[in-house]
Amino acid sequence: MSYTKRMSVPAANLSSMPNEDFDQEDPLYASGERGNGTSWTVLNGDSKVVSSMLAPGSINCVITSPPYYWQRDYEVDGQFGLEPTIDGYVTNLRETFAALRPALTDDGVVFLNLGDTYYNAKGRPHGKDEKHRSRRLPGLRAVDGPGLGLPRKSLIGIPWRVALALQEDGWTLRSAIIWVRKTAIPEPTSKDRPWRKYEHIFLFSKSPRYFFNREGLDGEEDVWFIEPDRKSLARGTHYAPYPRALVERCIAAGCPEGGTVLDPFVGGGTTMYVADEMGRSSVGIELNPDFCALISENMEKLW
Image 1: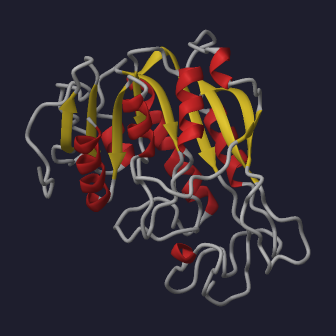
Image 2: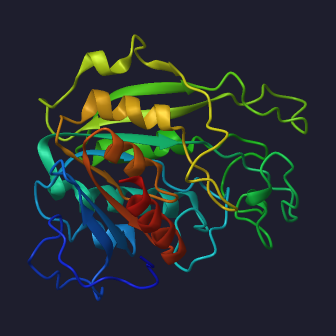
């Protein structure tokens, strides 16, 4: 089946009530049901808008890795990650999580993976990046020019800025997990600081009591040693997928059997593929229709 436009079939995870606050057409791109009773749904649109359209209490666990600040251009209008200010980026994320909060069950949790960014401030375009060629961005990035209010060469602290903003919004920050990649690609141009070999995964809960399965941690607590996937269904020119093993651990620890997983920045679809194979329903929100088409086709092939 070809997915070149949105399908008009209903999705169980969408609220039946129209959202009058937004001028958003039906976001449903494609959906399907499995013989084991689970389902999958791909929604096309702005995560802040579409998240507000999800049915209340329909999501058990959120697992996501939003676009990092000024790291990649996914070539779609309205994308996150290219905001002109740090506060603009943080605000977009906190508004997204505020929008999805009603859809999360009272015992639901969020696993948020975020990487950091350095403030270059050299006053010229970033140019080539041999470490990640998909990071090439046209023109002057916000982190290349003046005006961010930080000393030049500063690590911005994006993950913690976002985490503290969500905490201010009422989310309970339960853990700051360190994801270590022993085989992280070197940064030969960084001669006066340690190379980056870890990222943050924040565990948030909606309520003081929530679902958590310690056995799902696979013997590791708040430091996870998980290597990047070299081959993945999500890999492509612009994709930056996190490893399947990382998603597997989040689901095992934070989503009950038969539950539903949401990724509001689903990208290449890794969260949905893993959830499907682990017997969970999945909902993915993605702004780029090309990515929606890729995920939909792959979900059809997986069963």
